[in-house]
Image (cartoon, rainbow, N blue to C red; front, side, top):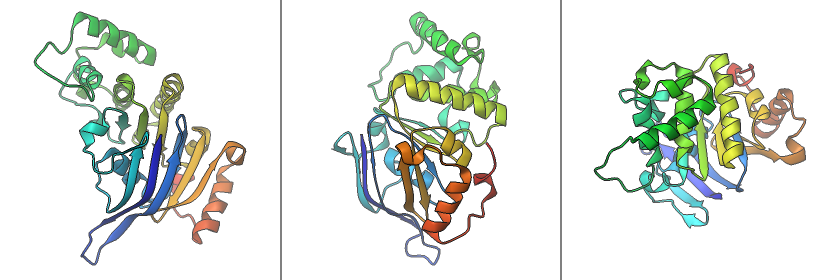
Length: 265
């Protein structure tokens, strides 16, 4: 489904503050994989997702999606097959528009657009049915401005928008990090349901090791722009946070000092 070959990305090139965010990362993601990406601040997690989506132009390497080289393709072309949720709900939804207007835009993702009625009676019926599945009461608030929704509701809406056009790859960039524990649990439950039902190949960046172990079928740990751990199947089952801390030390030679990686989500 997705092949990353030797990705290199540096920021601040030509200055004393140059930072290597991706240092030759190679990764093959099979169709149906649910990969959780874990690592400390500056490990390269978010940069990796942005490189896949096309939001970051890589310096070296190659990005292949379903066997097609998309390394230099613009974001709008990749959007036909990629859905994305960011940590900030403002990046995934438009606050000034209504719930139904956001969904109407999402439904047209990657498709030609012209002058026509954006939301029809049929559209509303379909939107209500999909929103009812979330269980947050949004099916009765189609005309509400997204700015009036809670953070959890906005992320749940963003998740529905990201999957409405049936993408084949879903990118989740710490999409529960800004939510309170209850809302985060609701959004993660919805995530698991949609990923399983739509059989979505998924890359999920998380700020927490416990969450990375609880969700997904494969775990990838990054440090200093490199992959230092990649486990799935039997090797992943039974792993606990203390095992990941030990493996982090063995692979990086440094102590893990970031508390939020260790605390429960």
